[in-house]
Length: 162
Image (tube, rainbow, N blue to C red; front, side, top):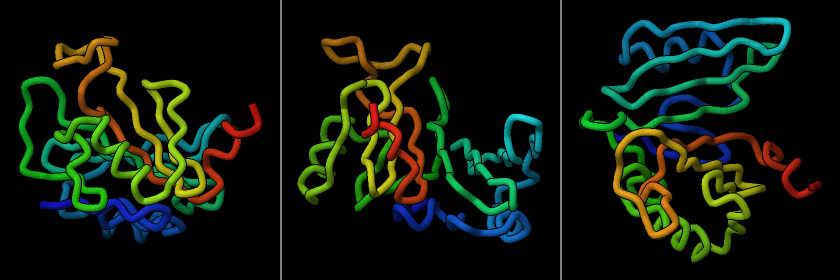
């Protein structure tokens, strides 16, 4: 299965702005999701697994999708699911190559924190944090991304206000 990232519109079958009920239908092929919240600090979250690729869907107080985060399967785990951005597999392609491709599209890449890279305006967020044993570069960073988040266009605006 291929999960196509189309920021700032969707991550796989989950579209930003979808209702909670629409998301339940979209992720049904992945099995029964876990639902967390709502709590006093956060709106509802839905967690599921697409053949080893973890998925967290974030909702606002109106139960509309605000962001979708996908997680690599983890050390020693394999998956037939590919997470694709512009034809590039996010979790198996070298992170530096993914970022070069984004810059080649004319997108601004904020890599001030190389473990938490964002593409503001598009809104993409990439993580290279992990405690697992994975190949690393000369700076000790994992060679590949460990998660990717797709959100609405203003999601990372707070980073430009620092």
